[in-house]
Length: 407
Image (tube, rainbow, N blue to C red; front, side, top):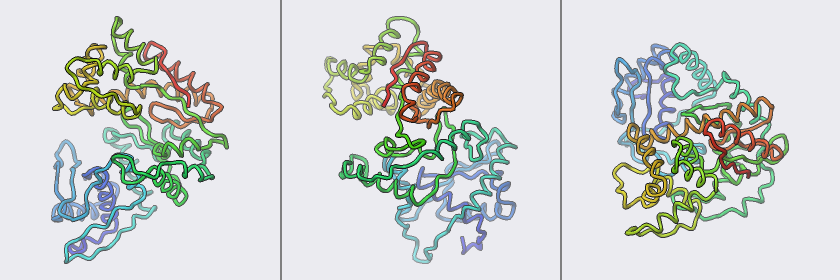
């Protein structure tokens, strides 16, 4: 950038944010209209020069008259690539900024850019104003300023939530990394607590496809169980087997709907499906002892498998076709237009319809809570009443009483 006389600090800060997005997703996007509105004409021109002339930037999707957003990626810089680990590990790395510095070409000097908080605040304010002028651009519904009453409510609850002060629980966690993770659960929790101790929580709520993302949504499970709200340990009300419960509510009256409801409300949906898969003729399927792994395999094989995966590789889906064929056909219809991601968006929107009614009921009673996708985090003394409200919300939406677990 310096060799092209692009020393504009706004542009450098914006490119630094693009680097962070690239490390997270493998690409970054720039909306020309938005950037010109938030940073000005001169900075916008400098950015266009950089994107056009930089040999380390590749255009993935060019901007059009209809869409002014272009998608780019960084290429040709050794050691500078997206993290290929699981979502949880990726989030840890992204939050803690522990990526290795890239090896730059010999003629380039390594330098760093600090994106200061004043720039981020001004950028967010101007972006919010720009979105108000172009509401169609606000697709992911990010709320920094408490425009929604739910956002303001959650900001207040987060301010009343405290991390555990006694760290002895860390010694009880596994020190061995699990498959797909580069650090152990113990190290993950220790680093998360260290990060939270050094960095204040930024008020930010995202509303994406029916789900709500707030600053504590990524809190590791062992820590989350030890959080306190108003000095009281938390509890959780959780919609059991949520995706299949939602699908059961979409089935027409008949044998399949009755059987699906029986399975999802029994608390043994995954176990029954596994037993059915194990008894299939001409299918070699070993029983999965770990409940967490069984749930993961069921999600992959029945909902989010790749289109090219043949049926023999998905015995759990074959079992679903045999036991509840209408649910299996419904899954395929929902996947037909948008694939696995389209099915996921449909299910999370349905999930949001159920959860939002429960959230509204808790707000009316002024009970502090934090959304957890298919669950709700509350004070321990409010767990049972929260579970009751979640059941009522699901009955109104799905037409039957689901299984709601209290943890």
